[in-house]
Image (cartoon, protein in one colour):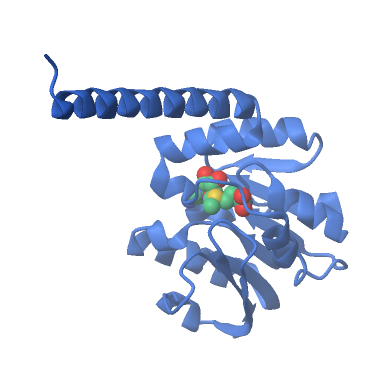
Length: 220
Ligand SMILES: C[S@@+](CC[C@H](N)C(=O)[O-])C[C@H]1O[C@@H](n2cnc3c(N)ncnc32)[C@H](O)[C@@H]1O
């Protein structure tokens, strides 16, 4: 005869199995629903290269609008976007009115580059590394603004130095850098004290996770 404890154990095991099955079905449905969408590509790239991609989802519409807003829509110099991913910031810069011929979109991951070229035919999408930015650009073209989604806090310190060194060399005096981080309190990059003055800082809560956006001006 079964005792009460045996029946309880059976019920518990059965319950756990049912929960596991429901979770598996839910996960498969989520993956299927995302299939072919930029967000699914982003998630896959994150799983493959977490320190390069730096986040699980593309930035939210609120964050990308906040990133594009400080960039002057008029001007002759280049606007450089670093770490374009699936192109959400790229689209916000175009919506802001930045002329496509001023825009240079830099992305290191080939999978994202293919998607960006499909999504923005005719735009200058350049596959390359932000640490060697100068070599990727048209010689001597002045740079008005750099809009960066690079996960700099996940970089080795020598890589951060290389990226910031490029910004100091290429950005014209008075030009702007827009950078965001998920570190909301503190966590400022030492290197940005040298040659840049902070002119705006705000937290964008409507993003997963919330992000701190900082705007710097190049000073000499
Ligand atoms: C946090 S994701 C941002 C993607 C997109 N801009 C957004 O806001 O959703 C960072 C992006 O930077 C790219 N990246 C990382 N290191 C890079 C490097 N050294 N040079 C160029 N792109 C890089 C990654 O491949 C990834 O697409």
